[in-house]
Length: 77
Image (cartoon, rainbow, N blue to C red):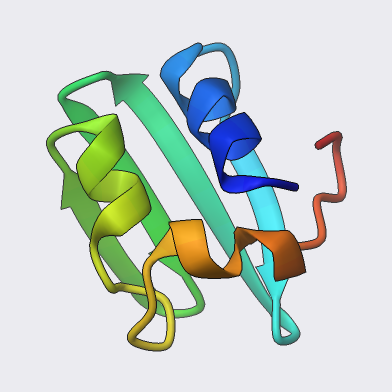
């Protein structure tokens, strides 16, 4: 999935988005545009905007925008 598509999906606030990356489970849970939780493996971080969610290095030290093309989405995407 392209970064623009994932950003729009997060911004729609319609779903918790589950994914797999490098064999680990992750989830993006957009409660609202100022409270977005991202979990990956045992780590969790809360972001205050969709842009921060996409651009902050968090998953293996990389931002989601750079690696989302490698995500596998079990329920859509």
